[in-house]
Image (tube, rainbow, N blue to C red; front, side, top):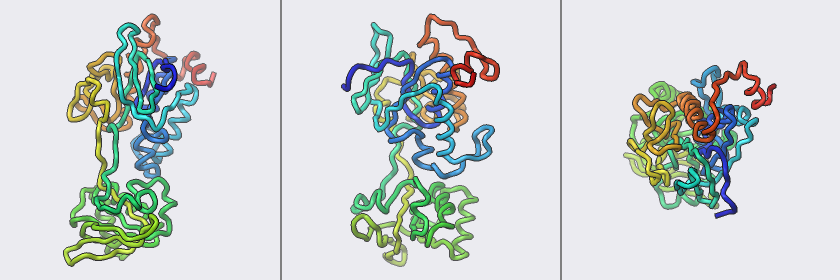
Length: 343
């Protein structure tokens, strides 16, 4: 345990877009938030998996990238001065009956005590499925990647993309104009990606701008973490495909991790909540975003924003039981203007 417990109104587990917007809704009500995330920066899957990919369904924003959305949310919550505890996993949760508080302990030994815990952990702990060849670890982070963080790192390179889903084809289409050479390897000539993406890929193959290889990766060639070639088993036999960068998109393994041990009601590995306030079966613990479940749930960022707004209303009653909750509009409330720093 590192020092005294941190007392705060709300601890938010997960610093993705929904967790960040929950800070805003809580801040409007005068509630202070601390956020815990096992990644090394705020943004969740938006920042980790598709920082450069466009998002089209954020209300009033026709298009923005994942990182742009995160940056705007961080700007929006700046007046409320949230505290981030990154590279830490929320592990142990216990109820302090005498204090009427939840005590949350992280993997780094940080301890929080608060009346409200909000789980906004997306799909839980998500890790990419790694390339199943013995030597993969020697190349990971140098020339073998499971996500694109900076497109510029792939410009002018000979790239091989492995996979048959949306991520594989989306990045194939995105990186093709910038790559020196680009190829796609998949175990069969059928794809799980959006039909439009598959059609665009096949047109590029016909035009000779993309090479399609049907087969499975069996090994990697190179030295000091830098790839020289990838061995691929095809119907015709094993080939050696030259490349400098390998992107493997085999999907993610989604796990609740320690949250699964918190005594919460689950439905297919997601947390069951009510639709009045998105509270779980344990009073004072809420779940919002992709990690929660209720009939009709849609896994959309905008749905998570709505869930965060209703959560904050109920959370206020736990944090300020002796105060009356007055509903105000940001357009007309002087009190909210002061909190936002625009008065």
